[in-house]
Amino acid sequence: MMNIVIRVNEETKKKMITYYDDKKRDNTPPYAIFQADEEDTVITLYESGKAMFQGISADVDAKMWQEINKQPTTYQPTKVKDYYYISAIGSDEVGTGDYFGPIVVTASYVNKKDIPHLEELSIQDSKQMTDDKILEIVPKIIKKIKYASIMLTNKEYNKRYGTTLNMNKIKAILHNKVILELMKKHQLKYDHIIIDEFAKEKKFFEYLKEVPLVVKEVTFLMKAENKNLSVACASIISRYIFLKEMDKLSQSLDIELPKGAGPQVDKIGKEIITKYGYEKLSTVAKLNFKNTERILKDN
Ligand code: MN
Image (cartoon, rainbow, N blue to C red; front, side, top):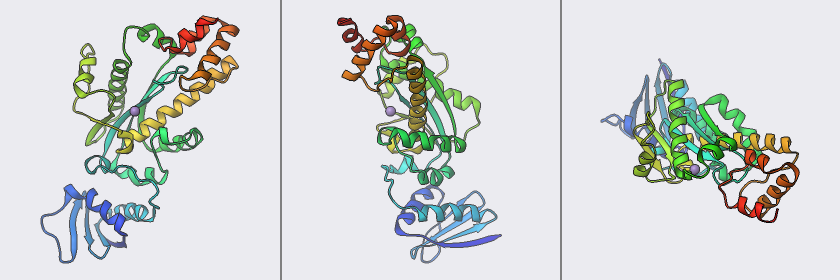
């Protein structure tokens, strides 16, 4: 039986109160804020900032909070009480706004206990993180957490989706598929499945009407990548795969493919047509974007 005492700051105190909220005992010892049970460990947090851990794996829990306590408070996600300190499966996609390159959707699983480690890597949404940073930290993240990704190539996109399906339906199909894939591969204990909201819940399930197997009990959150680390991880893993694929496509064409859908994209599109013809363009671009018209107009 171990008995470990550490000191924590105000910030960590707040985090502990949230974290153990659903594990609190009814009775609180004198001068304590709460006493809680998690698995074999009894945790007591005192007003003074003293935190006591008792039990056979007390060192594991104490170490986790010691690390959180050491952290500089640079990363400030919107810690929505119910969705931050939980174990979750989260999914997010990239490439839907880029003319060149695939659509990548990832579902990742973050256990509550992985949160301190991920915070240390200062995980953020892929939109707030530079590509260099993403290339540096994703290899570290995927060593730690479970994930599944789907890449929809431009060829498949143009064949199956280009004209008839709208982008939100594509997203719904791919999010559903990748979440189920992750759940099939691993036995996961989670509190919520969180999808970064791109459509209303009702619409999401409407899009999946013809899909035989549909994930149940999904939580849709706006800006979910800021509220839960499983979504943040899904976002940057997707971006990582997207960047690697863009590199590959650029090399195969010997032309550096730009991201987004702006004027530079049109310029490069024209260059591809001149050099290789339309057929080639259809293997690296999403043809139903307005860019295609502009690219073809002056050629
Ligand atoms: Mn998103």
